[in-house]
Image (cartoon, rainbow, N blue to C red; front, side):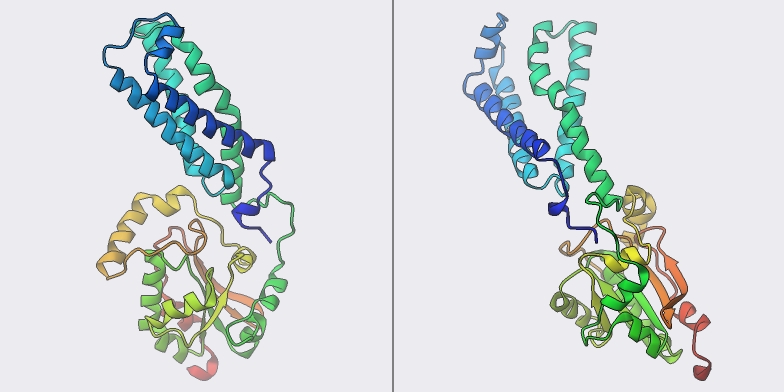
Length: 322
């Protein structure tokens, strides 16, 4: 089982280094804001004509420090803060080289601010981003063994206590894996199921919803689409998602141009954006199972893909339903 981000084995020295970066930024930013002329005096440089601009630089650096302190508590979750910080620490030295060596508009003495402000943080920030990328690609950083397919369908139960394996023994089931409940596309999926469930069930297929939230939250959400009577399985650790080989999406699958058009379509159908409830990187999918085996599957290539549920159920309907 892949643990949640806060439980990932990020080396303690990396967390402490990130916290140190936060404290350093706060100190350096406060120093520049309160004493804007002091750094120039130390380097024996002319005082700036507009010290307020230099103080703004100090303010920005200090604000970054607050972000690093927040990210130090859970670097895997707060990777965007680290990414933005690393980009600044890379682009800053590039700008310095251009201004100091090419245009000669900046004194070379400023190298003594570039080293402690930027260069020394490249390695730890990069290491943290690599760990975060591995986690969001589904790599188990702890070495724990993931559940087998059979273990997963035996150990996960619906709200009535019936295992997924038993549900599929009773009749074919259409297993609909949802993205997080606040996702526009999750709402569109529920909207589609509301209109198609009668045809799906008439084909002898039982819809089952798999989600990453607490059961109570899911019940309230499904009730809005009159789907709260369907079997639903809470899988916050995403064991079932991994057992069915549903991966976390790439940036292209989650935010690419195709997804933007799909999002506009979903919103025009009345589906809004809600609170993130679960793993925002998790991709959805649809499977038809019978007797513990997958009969048919649909894995989304983009987050907003809309499978034809009735076509899937029609191809797998029970003989008695014909």
